[in-house]
Image (cartoon, rainbow, N blue to C red; front, side, top):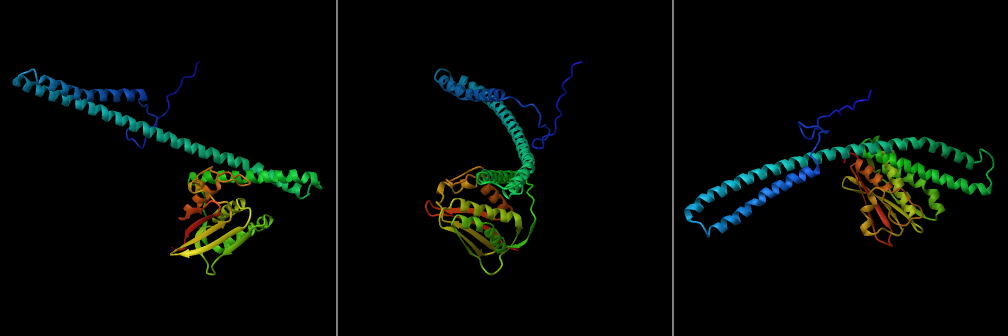
Length: 333
């Protein structure tokens, strides 16, 4: 016996009381036909007016006075019909827009859930690959010959890059879903900045770059998630190192009327003025660094800073380096 298709259940549409989100809507062609009818009816009025003006030359005053009332009534009826058709057209358009908005919201939720699930699925195998490669590089499985060391190093580099990409995608999906975990506490910005500087000390030395930190003695206390703020500063340091071939980085911490301002400045090639806002857009990559990133680091950094009621922006000129500025409210500010 053939299966019978069941009619889909229809949930109330909160945006339009008395309707359902699954409610069948008139097709676009139907809306256009209604629009054409309304427009045609309204366009008759000027034609009647022209006809009335022409007849003035050929009829007597008494006849014209009677015709004047007829014209007025016809024009009024046609105008009312056109107005009703126009209102119905507007209601149908609004209903379709609301339905399209609901559909887009569902698609966004599904996309965020998909990215989150895929990111979670990738994390475990990547962690296994990374652990095995690290053990191999350390010689735990036996001596590594010079011919083997370079391929192992390249594999480590790519696994690390994929691990960062998966982490960025997971963070992005959490932020867009409003589910980014935040463990806010009182912390001192000097401690976080020094810790990040220590993380990059080896890479800076390897690339022949300097790091200058100008930090005040008085503790710069803010309320925030230590790990997330460190993630922001790590991203800014990493970008500065990636795009700087000579010179170095300068980090300054300033206080101004209830806020703290962190500046990370480099001596790299700089960023064009038209790109200063675009660099905070998702998947945007600007410049010609030796390595390409995911284009998610700065957008995630911006979102994290905004979750701390702060602000981040960039200042730069071609050939004069770049300066990224973060402003955060002081504790109790």
